[in-house]
Structure formats: C-alpha cells, structure tokens
Length: 114
Length: 110
Image 1 (tube, helix red, strand yellow):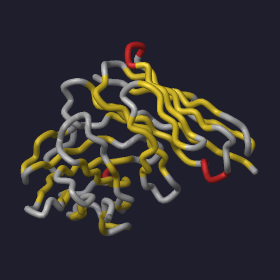
Image 2 (cartoon, one colour):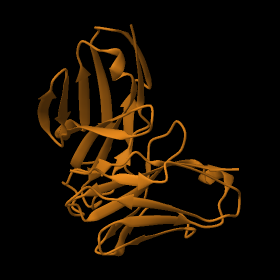
Image 3 (cartoon, chains in turn green, cyan):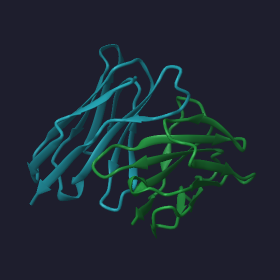
C-alpha cells in the first residue's frame, strides 16, 4: 500500500522563477491538502483539493495555485518566487474532505529560493 | 483565530526517562492528531485522538475535549524518539484544515 509520495525531494530556484511540486495521495484517498513549513515553525495550510476543485484555502497569495487530476494526484505551483518561499512543502491526503478523517503526510519537498 | 499551543518548547531527556508533552487548543475540535517529524521532515502519524485515551506501545495520548487540551506520554524514552512532536487540530466548521502548534523539540540522550 503506497503512502503519500511527493516529488522532487529537493529543489533550488532563484527569485522570480516558477516552480511546480507534485503529490500522489495514499491509495484509496481522493482529497489532497498542501502545507508550507518554514524553518522552526509548524506547517501552515495552503489549500485543499477535492474532485479536481480547490475547496478551501489558507492565507496565501494568488502566486500559489494548484491542480488536481482525475487520478487524484495534485500539483502545487508557485509563481514569482520570493526568498520567503523557501520552506518544506508538505502534501497530505485523506479519504474525503471531512474533518474527522485522518490525514497522512508525504516526506515533503524542500524548496530553496536564492 | 484558532490557536494551538504546545509546551514545553524544548525537552531534553536521558534515555529511559518518561515525559509528558502538552497541547492546548482554543476551540472545540472535530479532529486532533499527534505527529512525530523525523529528521528528514516526514510527519509520522502517532495518534488520531479527538477525545479519550489511546495507547500504542510506549506512547499514549489523552484528550480532554471539554477542557481543550491533549497530552502525549512517552515512557522509557529511546534515542530514536528524538525529533519534533506536533499536535494539530481541526475545529468545528473548519472542514479538514489542520492547524498546527509550533512543535516540541525532544532530544533523548544515551
């Protein structure tokens, strides 16, 4: 049973560039959420996708966008990268979007913006 | 907004010692999870515990929802228990957005 998988594991970009991160949910899960974790902090919710639509969004600018495919995999896109976007980006999946469902996390993508 | 506070922020233990990690939350919860973040960044699920008590080996957790706190107990700590422990909650009406605390950094020394 494959868990949540994310790619790539590490990424280095320069300011102003664009980046795409990828996530495959745990087998049988159809809901994907993305989180940003700055150094020394807890993860912060970016947005959640279910049925190929963004269902909920945290306090992040429009430079952060996403997509979900029919196979439930998801992408996180960040445009016009800033130094402050350097962080660990975590993907979580759950069975459905309900509050009482356990969320499982991938190993993350570590993004460095120079 | 919803606040999740964890204490203490840092904890240093000798191998074999017991510890209690605390999580206070500011609103009623539908979901509370404890995670262990390993040195590579992965969040490992420890407990899903919106209320009551659960045990898994040397770890156990208790959530008292009416008093808005949760406790994670680690007994007979091992060096492999080192890392950052997070609690995260989903409050009523927040769909499934997890709100995390800042984490507790645990160091277990041999």
